[in-house]
Amino acid sequence: MIGVVDVLIAAVLLGSAVVCLVAAGRSLALARRVHSMPTLHIADLREGPAEVVATLRAIGEPLRGIDDAPVLARHTCISYSYRSGAYNYQGPTLVDETVAAAIDAVDGTETCAIDVDHVLIVGEERTRVFKPSRFAELRPEVAKQIAEHAKDGDITEVTVTETVLAPGAGVLISGEASIDTRALPANDYRGARRRMRVRGSADHPLILAAMSERTAQRNLLRPAIALAWTAALCVCVCVALTLSLRALDFALTGS
Image (cartoon, rainbow, N blue to C red; front, side):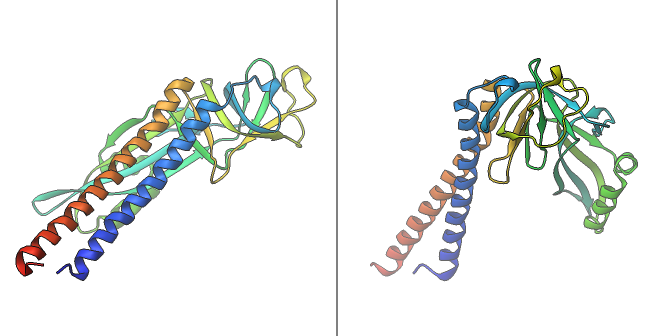
C-alpha cells in the first residue's frame, strides 16, 4: 500500500514543481515585457510603462565592487566552502543583495530620475574566489557571519559573484514612468521644465540591463527555462514514484 511517507514525498515534489512554475512565470513575464515594450527617448516618455536606452550617472558618490572599482549598481552573492574532517563541503549563500547608488539617466534628449528601490540588474556575472584572510579584509562583517556558520569546520575559500553596472555604461531601462515632482538638478539637460521618473515595484521590478534588448531577453528567459525543466522533472519523478508504488502494491497484494 502507498504509505504516508510516499504521499508526503509526492506532495513535496508537486509543491516544488508549483513553486518552480510560478518563478518561471515571473521570469517569462519580465522577458515578454522587454520584448513587447517600445523603446523611447527620455523626452518622449509619458506616464505608464516605459523603456529607454540611456547612460546612467551617479548623483554623488558611486558604490564600490568587490574589486574596489566604482559601480552604480550591483547584485552580489557570497557563499563559502569549508573542510570538516576528511571532506570538503559547500556552504549556503549567505549574501544575496542588490544595491544601487543614487542615479539618474541621460540619453541626449533629456534626463530622468531613476528610483532604485526595486531593481533587477541584468548583465554578465563575474566571479572571484578569495582566501578567507583576504576576504576578511574586504568584507569583515560578512567574514564574521561566515565564521559563525562554519564554526564546526575550517573555511577554505569564499566565492563572490557580482553583476554590476559601471559608470558611463549604456543601459536598457524598463519600468514605470511618472512625473518627478522634485526640483530639477542644476545640470538638467537643456533646462527641461518637466522631468520624468522611472521606477519599479515588488511585483514589477525596474530592469537595468547593460546589454542589448535581445540579449537582455535571452538572459531573462534562461531562469524561466531552467525552472520549467526543474518543474517537469519534479512531476516526472512524482509520476514515476506513484507508478512504481502501484506496481509494487499490485505485485504484493494482487489488487
